[in-house]
Image: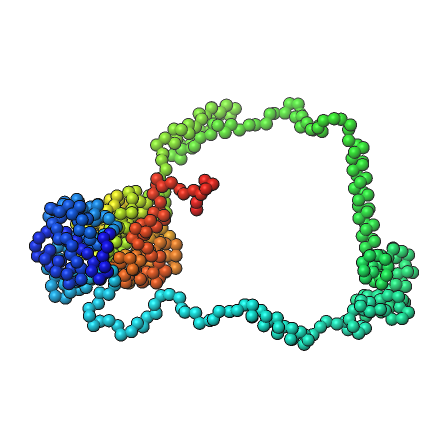
Length: 531
């Protein structure tokens, strides 16, 4: 794109000579634009437009130039130029307030801003909060200083922390550790009660000595754990008595199992090779053979046929012919599960646009290939209602078929429909256009639909597709500061959680959501499919 300034955009005007051309040229001058070329599209070629090095191209549509405009298709499809379509008849008839309003919108689009209000209507102050993170009020935290302060306070309060102690015991804590036993006491004895010298007589120990069953060796442990017997701790005799009984029981079980293994080894025959397998019991003489079932002779019964007569007693059943599975499958085919009218209800892609929307719609449809998996419904209100001209222009920008929605017609995938006001959707197996209902994108299945808000979209349509049920849907908005002429609807959608992108990027996201049938899945370095 040619270098230009934001204050003085360079514009090329393609229009037939006449009143419409004169009014548009005057409006461009009043909007602060530099008109670098005024040419009749029936006479000028695309090279002449490129040599003028414009930043924007304004086309005054007229029935006489529709065929000639095809020569400029490559220039108009070039994303380096901002393309504005204007009805020549409408431009010639605008007067008064309508002309002033159109001039303000034209100036805002050329200068790439969204201020379309007349002079004197500016707000005194901005009362609404602007998007963006709030400034941080907390200062930077010095973690080293904070940790040092906590540890210092812990050292200061350490003396006041209560400590555990053994009640009714010797002063200084656990007896026998860190101090010598009293005179005349060889070691301390520890149990669940109070600490007492081990030399003192214990009634339980005396009873255990009198009991013949208590003659189990009593192991002892010393404080150092080396088994020398110095400063050993005495243990409860009853506890080791139970441990000895358990050990005797385990030894008995092991001895029993060993005896069973020896007996099995003695009784096994001394023969090399695998063990013999017992033969099945022989059938008694004269017994009838077991009946067998031949599943190959089964066939489907005819519900309408009369019941077959019962066979005569003793008569052999006639052989039933086998079923020819190939003949049964002849003529049958699987229904397309992704077609409308079969399987689950499919959704659609809805494009909401308005003032400044034709250029954005053209850029978006340029990325939609033929055979797209979902229908594309474009709702773009026109002042004159001349959708036939718009459809003809958009057909040159996309490979998908483009038409105007009509009452009673079926909605087909892969088609681009421009939906005029007064045409809604109704579910009848699939989707059909219906003039008796208002258009409501919320009737589409959210998990399989997408709603896109381009320049000029109505902000009042955002709440219908902004609820929690649309979390699985695809909501996108045109980035407000990237050629968005009227960003009110796009900003409302972004505030409701929609993603935003340029029109070409939005088309790429649609293809990522519904890849074309011939798309090759992406793989990583190991050849595995990417999710």
